[in-house]
Image 1 (cartoon, rainbow, N blue to C red):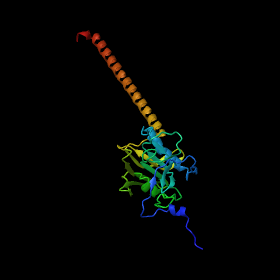
Image 2: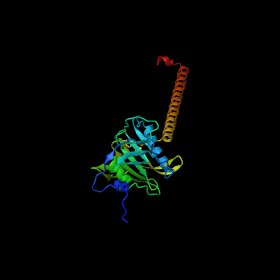
Image 3: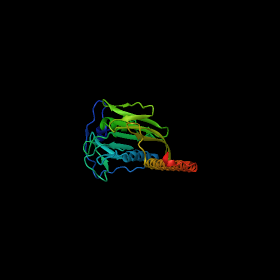
Length: 274
């Protein structure tokens, strides 16, 4: 008996020598999106912290899309492919939707500038260059979507890898001595920071501006404002003390002048005539 290969499987095999055919089609309304729990409770904290500092700095504009565990779609050789990075930044979308289910580049806006994947204890295919359906994340971000920056962050040990698309391939970018990488399309540095936010203590991804100033979180802004108010209160108190001291010196000078005038008068000398 001869077994005939499944034609659907054969169609989904992308030959190494043949470039995949990519089309940009909207996600049908009847296509369900997986609603799986995140791999680790640290993932939403890391993603939320990245967005928070951008929002407080006034970086985020209405036409931008910044999301976490959000489906990026493309149709590859006739098959719908959806990948949900842990964090994604799209500088401009064509239509603003309050309840957007997914995003298809070129159809609904420009290509994302940055995608991030956070590594914890299991392999999520972040380094997979698998070309066959469903393709690996690396292959999808690099060859299908051509996203300029692919960030892989291992928060347990604080390991950061930033890959930039160069001549169609991702190349690892060197970190600065401060463990940062310049993301030119955002005008910001992305780097590693160690500390505590909410209930999590460890390594975080943070943003710095071109001058090297850390973009603060809300709690840090509040503390900075508290310190500013306290410093202003201390300056005001110092000014008050200096004013009191100057007033005391002036009073002492007046008393000395009065005593001198009284002495001169006791000696028959009019101090006004001097």
